[in-house]
Amino acid sequence: MLKIGDKVKFLNAKGGGTITGFVSKKVVNVEDDEGFEVPCLVTELVKDERFEKTGSTPAFPSVSRKVASEKAEVRKPKKESQPLFASSYGKPAVQGGAFFVAFVPEVPTMPLSGEIKAWLVNDSPKTVLYHFSLLAGGYYSTEKSGRLGPFSCVPLKGFTHADFSNFPDFGIQILPFETRGSELLTAVVKTLKVNPVKFYKETSFIENAYFPARAFLISLTENELAKEIEKLKQHDFSAPKGLQESGDLVKPDIRKKETPDLKEVDLHIQELLDETQNLESKNILEIQMNRFRFEMENAIQNGTKRIVFIHGVGQGTLKNELRRELTNRYKKYDFQDASFREYGYGATMVILRRK
Image (cartoon, rainbow, N blue to C red):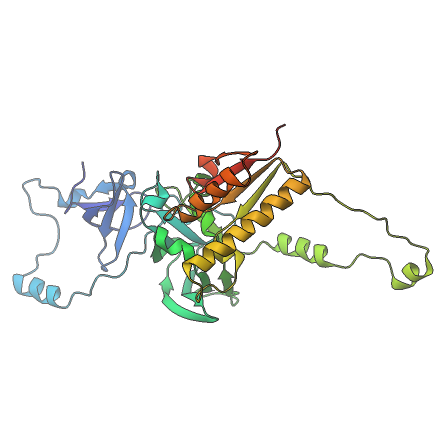
């Protein structure tokens, strides 16, 4: 059984240190000789037998109290935690390596009940320089920057449920490098727009190689094949203009009638408007309800079977107003809480047409 103060060694990596605290029953913090405090799985640690109390003095050179005191005085301050992935140890979990922004809930079983912390994950053998900023009012404001070692991650910022109503866009800049390499590596520059509705869905948080808890991972590494497919989608494959004008080629009149079984509508104000800073609460509610009525009428006209309105939890104002109108204006249609697994408590499903 490990306890605070024990000297330990890493089973699958070089080095070791002293246990300084417990993160959970399975994870402890270990401070190495350079002052880094690293979260590690208990199963990946073993007591350093050189420090076991056997009645004899450990086989280390003796150090006078004076020298030890001087060392204590000049000891470097603790650096921010930069944990190694317990499952990696030199081998990326993603083939070729990757970078992620990860959202890790404080309470894994109920993500919205506590803080959700954003992390930058470096799942590669490269060292990186990173810059994290938030986009607001057309300007990127620096939140954090620094250096991140291979196969490690660093906390960026914590968010709570109150932040979801005006969730910011992320600016991410990553410059990977090698202390000795044959070529310069490509930088990653990305503006990341995260829909906070994802935090309401249990399925967004998955088991992963980087954290003991389930996490919502967003890749920052573009897939080259996906980029080429996107180029093909944007390419103009229409016939030459001369053929169209001559009448040799006639485009068929294809009119697709939208009759989906299920339609999803996000009523969060940031999904409806680009700028919301100058709006009062009553104006926001009016905009959301107008969108609700529009989508209801459109779904009824198109023969949609079911429609889900994502309203979030919050104070319950939008949810109560939406259900009051369903009861009075659309009383011929049944409604209920949408799937808890998909939306948590933050959505209402209206049944427009039976199967």
